[in-house]
Image 1 (cartoon, rainbow, N blue to C red):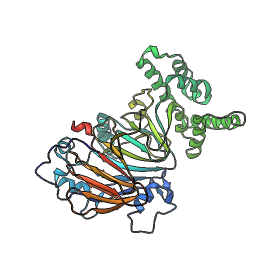
Image 2 (cartoon, rainbow, N blue to C red):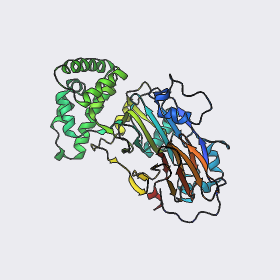
Image 3 (tube, rainbow, N blue to C red):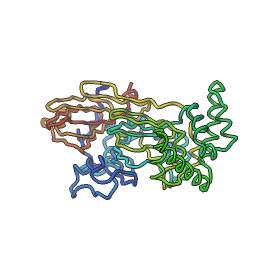
Length: 428
């Protein structure tokens, strides 16, 4: 969590550390009741009688996005407070992103698959927002990174050309929907034909699949499920085939079930992370994660969802790159602290695992930070405050730019913290 630390600006923020009250999103795909990490984190600081066992607790939002803004315990919305003393953001951040946090920090608890989706780049986001502001509420892009807290399963990016050829050879239900002409093109294309030729064949085949009629998709899925259930009695199904069976139970007759064959299927172990750039297809499937992204809620969906689908936009915007995502495991930056650095200016995430009785000093950085206490308990001390204050699981703090922070773990278990901040590379 150490970083460059030029002298602070003359105007100091009025409060060194700010405890936040953060909003929960109850999307239908979230884990329910106490089974949800989001519920347990939000309940740790709630005044009511604990999570509702029947209610999904899908996402905890920590930031200033207007769809679910965080507020200060004593002083209204964080966004309004940031507009008053701009020094809290630091001059470089204020100059680049105005009087607002450039990142949105989240915890996700996923029980069933999220939609097949992609996030538009900045130019497309502005166009979509202007054309359909009710659906696309932001003019901003939404690069993001997910860090697994439990095993976290994801579909992300298109599989390699050889795997896609195997799909067309071994999954007749997909081949039928793609059609003989596009299937033949994809089966015959060679990597030495050039990247653009491969992308063109893939785009055409994927668009054919995603735009097939409801009747054709329903018939194909019925055939596929019948065939896989029969074949499972005489052979071991592949991981992707088992995934498709489980997706069909969650989203019957949904074309997203078939589209899963086109994507990389990834299982992140706890502590592993991946990042997703603009216009890349993905779907979170199950598990719990820390997520950070540029401040935006722009999503273009095309499958595995009851929500609005914009299939033509999704199929036209995708990059059609065939690259297995880079898996990040965090780089040690000081004792007890690992940093996850994606290739985006807006954010980075640090994970601090502090054994009982230990202390970590976080050097001042020239941008704002948001801290989440994920587990354990201890004390936070900010700058020259003579006394620290207690902190426990579920506590969230905003820390202004140029502020030193000390955490000490005092409970019987390890204190685990996550910090979201502006990418250190931005300041270099």
